[in-house]
Image (cartoon, rainbow, N blue to C red; front, side, top):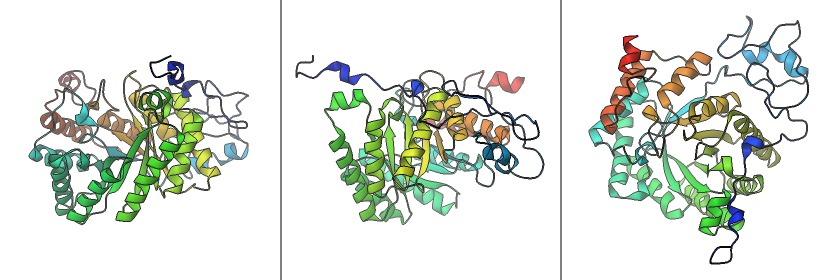
Length: 381
């Protein structure tokens, strides 16, 4: 027991990597292979053809989803990387989560602006402007970035981070009011057992916090995304509490976070399927899912790709994979692989290399010689 009488055993994390699928749910990997926790046999599509593997184009005559309609009708579920008419979106977290790494720097404003243009050049859809509530410079920089995006007509959607506190959300609202631009609030709170144990939080506190953030966003006329911090180590009951509170608070999106780089591809499938099922049960099928991952086990890119294959609509990453501890999902590698797999339009590698160079200058972060896209050894080859 701890000094205050609490049982440290209560802080043991839930492991989504070992989660069992719900009755009747048999998650499948891209290519039609059963996930390790799946069960039962697998039938190929009608006609004896084998399912397409990662990056292979669907048979002539339509999108992948249409091409394999016979398989769906037969009860099989494919997790294709190809997205058809709507590519998966990429959110660049470099100027928020990325600069939380202790070895990176908070870039100068000129470098931040340079990096914004590099983001647009590689097709980034959404940028996180930072966390305005953390101080005057962060607030002023967020305003500056918004003005640059508007003035240069950069095709970047706008988000900003906040804790699930009304005061934090109100600072995002002040940026939106000062610049006249719509900004989506990404408000985060953790629900893993270790976080609840350390903070002394419970389900009621989580629900009240989400409600507070949602009400503040609604009062300011801003869309709201609930960021479920450390979701990959949070038990289902706590996530249900968060999801229900988010729906009640009018959330437009829900972000599933692998905050400690814990999850493996089967765990990604299980968590995304769980989130879809719970939102469906709440009558909130219109809420879209984000994926935010870290690289503590070296699985950040693989987990992000699997989240895309499992159907999330938006995935987060940072330039050069910078971020806390061992960093976040690497954005340029994510974009390159999504282009190869058909989930997004491909981006020329020279543009991705230029993006890396801009990030390196902004963050004072060296590009590794063996970086697959921008490294000196890679370019030489």
